[in-house]
Length: 255
Length: 255
Image 1 (tube, each protein chain N blue to C red):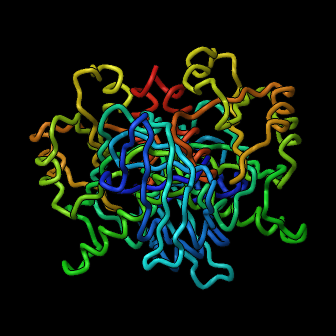
Image 2 (image 1 turned 180 degrees about the vertical axis):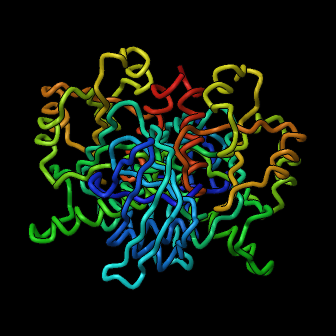
């Protein structure tokens, strides 16, 4: 797979005849030139979160500019293949330690489009509110890196940390599935009975290490969520979201 | 979930009237007494890899014995709920660093029953043969710990490191699926067309970071394997096996 770079759409200029020129600068350029040792003539893919892929070659490198930058020129612009045809949102109650890093990396690989880090009754980690934005930015960087390596066409969005019920209220027309070990309805039953055509997306809601309380699940159900089981085994909190997303996409994406 | 302990079946003694007494010793007892602070009266589950669960209470604790041990007595013996109804084997070409630890932990959570760490053309890690058994024992410990936490009824078995083709030759009557990013057949097509009733199990074969060569895939196909795609995104080597196993079990386990 050719190296992939995300830029703002303003960095891509369409040219007459269907071609484009893109400027890659900042951290992306730094990494490309210092670590990947990108050089003129290399084939690369530029992405701007529009759902399109711009295939071209490196035309010129300015590695001594501060910050360094380079330009890509090409003719092939096509839909990005690695994007799910509907939103896949993971509302993840904050797990301990640095496990959210793993959730974001693996979740991006399998195809999650939105991450909503959440607070719930049994969340035990506490972030200093002043550090919450730094955490979010870290997860956003992990998502971007995983999106590049996984052939994604858009960068998943990582939202600010909010209470779990607020995350649900802020959803649009997603089918909301709470993964709850005490639920009796298998996720398979819901996925096979729902009409995916009428659904704008799926939101998967995962509790922290201690799970959700019955009261929390009731409150989520009152907001339209359905509690489902992932099967007879118990997955750790950091495993449940990416696995459930992979299953939703297995069932509903493509043929 | 009550704490779960794996023992050799010789450590469980059936009693008249349908009850049992089990002795837990060694590392399991050490961990139970020192970390979990198990005490007389606590409800626990004892497992012996037979596919049965023994539910009972701690009767007596000998924490000053060297090694420490304790005894569990109970009446309820029932089939272990967390075991797949067929073998799920992961043939994993060795990934870099300690990623195999993650593969074994996450794979055990989702339900893999056998791990076969493998060598292939593009494997870059090299284990000193004298350390290979220590590695295997480490993965076996990780599998045991994950099996306890995940509610599994049996400990997955971790085989010795072997060449990937040898792993395939040593399989019994498994449906062999090579997860290959260049394959055109979606895994969904194969899972929905195959008759799972006639299959003793599924073996999933995953390449290292650099993937399998076309030549390797051909050799595996000559041994009866089918190359399949996991979808439009590219999963890292350590993600592919657990995700594919979760999908196989989603499709074929239960209703």
